[in-house]
Length: 291
Image 1 (cartoon, one colour):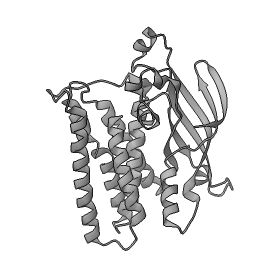
Image 2 (tube, rainbow, N blue to C red; image 1 turned 60 degrees about the horizontal axis):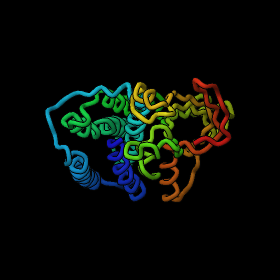
Image 3 (cartoon, one colour; image 1 turned 30 degrees about the vertical axis):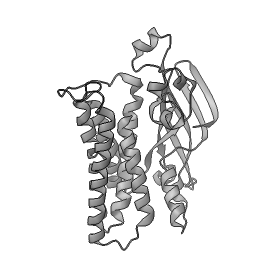
Image 4 (spheres, rainbow, N blue to C red; image 1 turned 45 degrees about the vertical axis):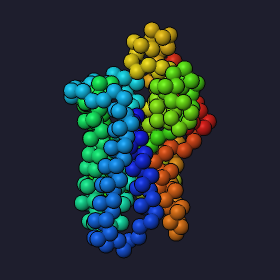
């Protein structure tokens, strides 16, 4: 999840920009935003690459097939990350006065493109390698955002994230995280990814509550190691989890307060605690509040 860390840093920068900009942004200010953003991205990428690769250095470029790992939860995480980055960048570019269709294309291209240098650096790392699965997931996430915008001019199916702490992180804290901040990024057992369906947007005359969505979620459990065989040898039977639950669409909440709009914009990328029905290979269960 090192690449997700890059996105988190850029996400924070982007959110600050959303709060601070007005509809009267000029082309000059757009250019300044692009320059500052490029410099900030370059400095962040350099600093993180030094932190990640300084100890082992770089070697010859190689490919690495990590598609069978972590029950593909990490791949869905890449999908979610570039979807969210496309959403944020589109919001920023719209405030510059750039034509909406162009800003949608640019934001989606940036959503996947800004993680590509990190993927390439991984290719030169003796520990990781270039994962074509990550690149495909990155592209699909930004493409999912763009496709919906071109089809409906809105996001009727939103990609969302939820997390809860698990006891498994304590078994391998170096891999699954030590403390809440690390575990959110590293513990795939506690991560769930959702497709939140805006029922009202699909049936605008139905009278269905605008703020209430239907969520389809995915996660996995009992993953101490990345691969199934490794978990079995350690005595853990990992398995997939599928969820059907309610979700809240915060984009329908209207307010004149810029700071509150920013908070709602951020929270709309997260599935808030709500009832959910879980199905897995061991059976099914109902969660009154799942997150």
